[in-house]
Image 1 (cartoon, helix red, strand yellow):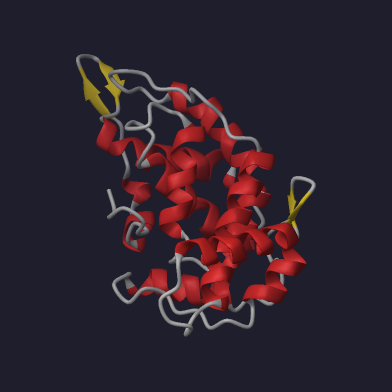
Image 2 (tube, helix red, strand yellow):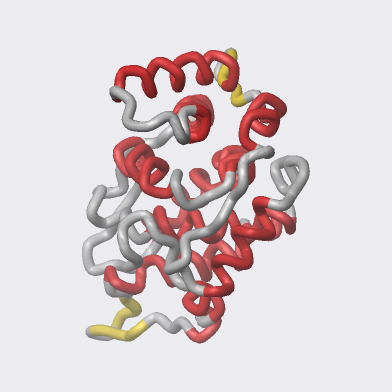
Length: 221
């Protein structure tokens, strides 16, 4: 499992074709530490083709982050996703969220269908779902926090209440009627410089840099 809030190194995403289910006691079983690999392979075989090519890497990376935490969260996506978004917020450009929200219905349906079919010793299923509307609100809150931090940058130490006030004001502009206003997000965050974390592996940094350079919502449709 990657460090909390960090993407799995990209070589892992390129070695999944060699994944094999191990035989135990006359049946095919998957150990919990191979759950992520199993799900990513199944996603590639079943659902990935329905994701726009420009968003496939983003959706697969987010699936890896989700799958790594499914056992600990007992399949509760409503509990798993909010802290995951918080931990990723400092690492990803806004385009990442645009692509994830656009493909969330597909990704969640995949997990609901495929997770119970994984031959774990103790079967796992999605125990609580997260609607696209709920995800949109969570994402908008993270983007508002990012925008508030950028807006107040260079003003010295400020009380948390002031940062939260700015974030609340930005949220009202970014999130309306259950939808993220991506044009407003782009206007707010596109002018800001983006630099991926230096401790990420090179292919991951290259992917995030390329994602941040997309001028529109490529792959988010």
